[in-house]
Image (cartoon, rainbow, N blue to C red; front, side, top):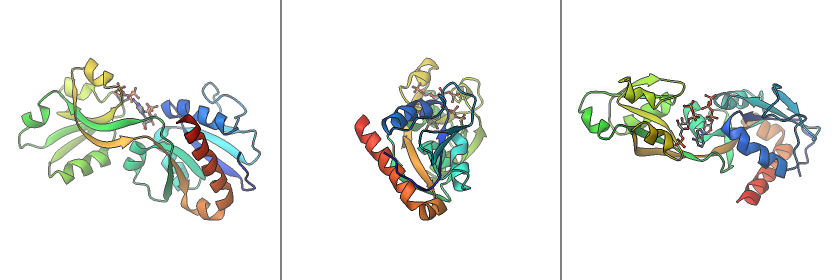
Amino acid sequence: MIESTDSLTLALSKGRILEDTLPMLARMGVEPVEDPLVSRRLVFPTNHDNLRLLVIRATDVPTFVAHGAADVGIAGKDVLLEHGGAGLYEPLDLDIARCRLMVAGYPGALERAGNRPLRVATKYVETARAWFARQGRQVEVVKLYGSMELAPIVGLADVIVDLVDTGGTLKANGLEAFETIEHISSRLVVNKASMKMKHAGIDSLLQAFASARQAAA
Ligand code: ATP
Ligand code: PRP
């Protein structure tokens, strides 16, 4: 039950995360006016007068919340790492859309590159640079927006940094995972100013999410 006299805007990530988020919202008693999985709306009033939802691209959620366009958001840890998290609190792990951020490639690819800079294809440019810098390995990063697994196959990169869940996509393309950079799940993020100004409402929303997560466990 969400009790808020503050008006709250909650930014949801489209795609996989949305599919896991909607059952949580239902357990919390939050009903959007239309089904976000089929509607072309971007803003969804709900049965709670003081709560509206935005449905946006996963990678945009930290930006909307950090700028205060939304008070609260739901985003993958992968996206939050890449964003850097400035202006955001990350108070709750929702334990949905779980996967791992990994380095992968053809078997032996890391060794075959020898001492030359490793060519890395990824959507996660900053995270990949930081990971290889910590290992003292020089890299040339190629930014892609999807289908990272194709890069080693067509000679665009030696390795990829990408999300792995079942491992099915790697296997189907003859690739293997080498190392885990981070365990990923979706997190609740809160705008720092909203946390102060709308503390009671946000606290109530956090409690409701925490209960819905427990109910699913
Ligand atoms: P965008 O449109 O912003 O580029 P996308 O097309 O990658 O995002 P999705 O594939 O729905 O959108 O993934 C969004 C989020 O879901 C990721 O940031 C990650 O946190 C999680 N995710 C992605 N792939 C998987 C997976 N295979 N298993 C579990 N969670 C995943
Ligand atoms: C994600 C990720 C991998 C795949 C991993 O891709 O980028 O390609 O899922 O899942 P698996 O280990 O269970 O096979 P997505 O399906 O989102 O497509 P994308 O390449 O367009 O991002």
